[in-house]
Length: 555
Image (tube, rainbow, N blue to C red; front, side):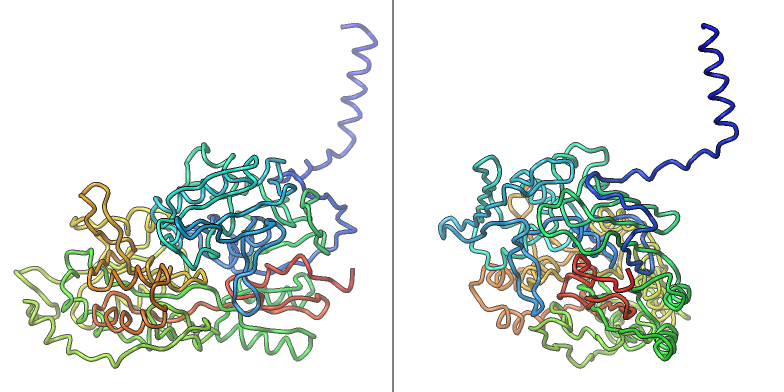
């Protein structure tokens, strides 16, 4: 090394020793967003209950208000929900979508030429194929019935024209292919479908892109995407920030947050009311497309007898479960008294019958006797396993209350909290007869806007490819009733009106004591007056679906 080189190196080291090392720049999770100097950022901070991982909107394990928000801002959809709940073709993605053949029933989508992922890969037919293949085969997915009707997907014009061929007519086809995923990055990714969008978004195709996704710190930062081909958002940045309800309300009071979306309890409602006396704000209730339900699984050997299921259901105090789970928050007014449609749906009709039947008589008829404090049969106590997704509320709280109520009735029970991916992907997909079988599950029933598909996905059968086409359960409950299956299929294909189908099916479902729906989950939306355009959003979409049009007056 020459003398001049040595001097230069020493000088450089000396300079670095007396100069503060700048922090490393934030590296975006996905390319394509505009980096804005902090002092000039036009930002809205949204306080939320949690930002924990699992952001795949198509899995039951990932359902949350944050997942819905991220999907609406980062992922492309063929149709979105209008304010009246009807589907509207998304012109950001599609040029057209229409039924082009009745036999076979075919829907043709034409994708915009300029629609692409943030890594410049085109949004194309392979994204449709990937979602279809996963939704029809993977366990624990949201509302798969419509996807199972698809026979084939063909591609034309470089993947920009997509022809979807169905085995039978499907009037609900507009509910399919929302929140498309980047197939070119996920189809061969480590971990497969189970890990898809587990903790990041490898590519996006919306008005925002991910700048930071920091689960330990509880913060997700979205910034305007400069690769979005349509009208850009007004805001530079939307930040989702985790805090408990008290701290979120304090952040609103201090101006550190401008919007909050929380599953408020009675205390939080009172705190927000008090804040409103000194601060200009608006509040609204935002129902999620999610019903809290208690499933009594016929797939369980202990509950395969309808008399035992009915006795267990009659041993539960439904009103108390609703009160405990809703915490006297907005959900308390959204009692779910129907097996299929949520209270906020346009087609909602309460079908809850008078709950009759003596648990003592039913268990006695099923061969049980009360010995001491427990019900027993053949010298073995009736002991049930109640499962709920670990760390997900209100499901764990409701599960614990179910356990307490059953114990008071002489039915031994234990609560098993399992990681959501394992619960929905394995435990509730198992219809075996092992001792580890889940007997009762406290889980969500999502709503996708197509109640016929929800009916088929929640209570329908499918044919087993390994057993000569024998009908088997195709739902979390492990329920398959050949008496109602033909009507379910007719409702799905539009051969009978959904209202007529539900009129005959709902009484059977209540009689079979398979599911006890409790209430629809709802969040409280709070927005300071300095942010304009914040509303509850369209049904199924949530308030952040409109974040691209939000405006902040003080910036």
